[in-house]
Length: 200
Image (cartoon, rainbow, N blue to C red; front, side):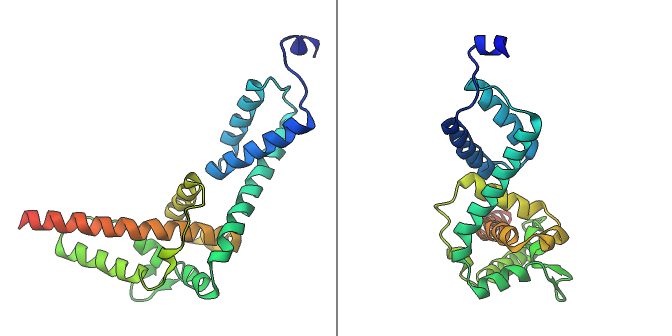
C-alpha cells in the first residue's frame, strides 16, 4: 500500500465516489455490456490515481449503474406512452395469422430486391407503422447512444426474450426500435423507387 501511495494513488473520497457513480451511470446509458463497463471503470480509477477497490465492489458498482440507467430511461419514456400506445407496442410481439409471424419480425425482415413486389411490401409496412402516432414521440432529450443501444436490442433480441422483459425494459426497446424503423422504411422506399425507375 505504501508504494502505491508513493506513486500518487489515494483512497477515494466521498465526493469522488459520488462523481464516479454519476460518470458510470452516464456510461451505462451508452453501453450495457457489464465487462466493458467494468473495464471503463478501472481505466477511470487509474486515470484519477484512485486505489482500486476489490472486484466484488467494482462489479456491484457496474450492476447498480446499469439498473439506474434502465430506471432513468423508463422515467423518461413512461409519460410518453398512453394505455393504447403500450397495447400497440405489445402487439408487435403477437403472431399475426395473415403474416405467419409477428409485426416485429416483419419489420425486421429486409427487402431482398427493388422489384414492384418489394416496394409494395415496404409500403404495407409504412402504412402499418403510421396507424398510430408513436412516430411523433419526441425523444430528442434522450442520449442518442442510449436510443441506438435500445433499437439494436429491438433488432437482435428474440421475440421470447422481449416478452419476458419487464415493461420498464420492454417498452423503451420496442419504442426505440419502432421509430427509426419507420424512418428507415421511408428512406428504403425512396431508394427502391429510384432504382426501379432506373431499371425501366
